[in-house]
Image 1 (tube, rainbow, N blue to C red):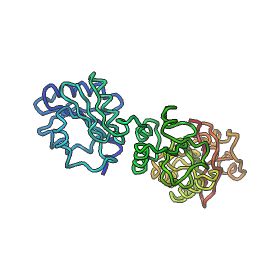
Image 2 (cartoon, one colour):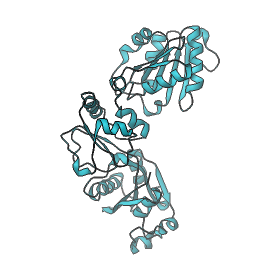
Image 3 (cartoon, rainbow, N blue to C red):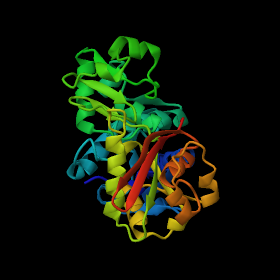
Image 4 (cartoon, rainbow, N blue to C red):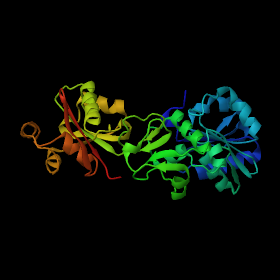
Length: 358
């Protein structure tokens, strides 16, 4: 199994020889910005605040999945023999970079794209004034690495098997279809022109061809494609007292499915939920947000009542003090974005969805 999400920002830097230990400390000071970098060194070299080990092999195996990345300052063979028994999958293994004790090379050894080892190797080489060594096929051939681009752009919904199909198609010089109307993937004009067939509308998408779809909506049939989702959708939720988690999820799913302009709104693009502050302690709402892994915003009745584009309801006004809850909450949470899915009622719950401008 892969490492827990809360470990992905943790970086362990291993030194072995005296020169390697000093280089590990240097990397820790520089790479620690934005990452929780920790130095691991032989017990006899450990300073206060550092973790010492008796055996690099045993300690690296033990802590392998306790971090999103490892930098091993030692011979590549040492690192390979240490981690070989604990490897599982390119899609779940953490990044591993190997640096020589002189700092001449930073080798992306494992999980170059998905785990981020290629980028980590480049950063380490920059710190050391050395050379990054990256051997993944797309990089060697000068092809765009969709998985790296997606991670850098903050796109969600990544499917490793679909990404593999895209990488193979690019290596075989097939023209991969691309629907990215807002150019969120970060491809250069040259990359778009040389490696992709650009679709001007969603109706041009073919599920029988490899392709990359970058949007918060659709497609109806993804087929062989890879869907990458910008976190741009905000759902407003209203509910009667005692509404269950499932009631709220049913209303939300109905809003995503039923009013997406013929193309379903993507759950992976949800960035947050919102409601009226009267529902701040509603168990079903809190449980639904927890299951979706989304934050909750709450707005006062006065703030919701000022939203001009929300569908008014005299009954809602009578009970809550505002003419609209779910639509107004969705619009406010999205920063005044456009309403995509109007108020959808399922039993004791209502939901609406708006999209932020960015």
